[in-house]
Image (tube, rainbow, N blue to C red; front, side, top):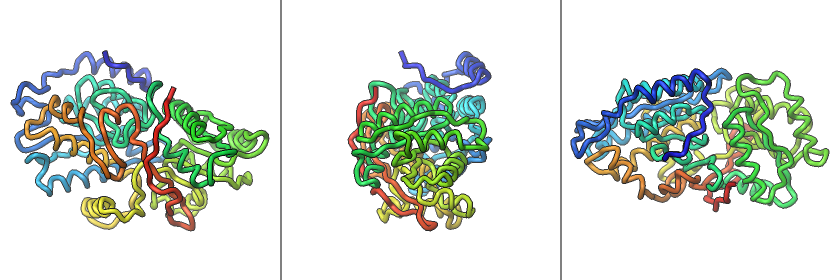
Length: 418
């Protein structure tokens, strides 16, 4: 029996999910070796779609995830496709970071568009996960929500980032921060997240991870409303800046999206905080276009689960060239492009291994024994990646209007999560 996937769906989304599960047909699943019977697969093509939060209530957008995926698929097609089949990429559905729309997008891609796979899926809400799992749809995205941890058909391009008890926690953020601070011994961190399921999981995960690295976690709360930006951050800053025995911690760790980070970081700086500020979101040269944003993020160390764009590796040069070709011009790079690109790359690697006779069964068989090394997210292997992260990361610091590597890309041993 499959482990239930915990979603953050609203009552409306739950109703839609029940309807979807009762009415969805699985008649499109593979039958023997006849590729015509496989949903989304023809002798010449493989149909793939995406789900991305292109618009959100806060103004935060992951739209460039779609560009990153398209860039990788276009190169695959230019090189002859996957075992002779071209990727028919339909683009990404916009879920608006809304649970009901996420599920509706999943249903549309499977029931109407008849896709073989969903790649990328990039949203903090993944209410369509149960549906995609039951319909046996290989799905790839950034494993920063719990639905990427455990299911058979859902894969994080960097592995499972928020494991369930019994799994492990990647230490790239705590160890990277320790590198920046000259060690974790005697240092304290305050961790803040949004008040939703994703934030609660993040707090539970990082509280253990930072403590395991040797930090004192002086504050850890999922307290900031996820549906609206606070107009006054003083209630949070007062708690944070007094959390370390009445004084400020050595580092403020935010597990939130850019609009929230701008507000929080501006507030703690105005309150006189001189320590390290870090988040996993704000690696985007486009953010530097506005002076207020650039000032708020100046000095911030951003966690990356992939090679920094500043890397000179052959893989990074290829990525930049692919993005340039897909965009039709030079564009500022951001982490959303990498999310889409590496989601597509992971799907393509497994599909290639599955061979000419591509079915869901052959794809899953290829995934079960998949491994490779030296990618822009480190060494990938399955089924490990469905239980724990691949464990690699770097920190970059925004300084004087440019990003600089503050902790180099490296892979770390995970720690148990319980």
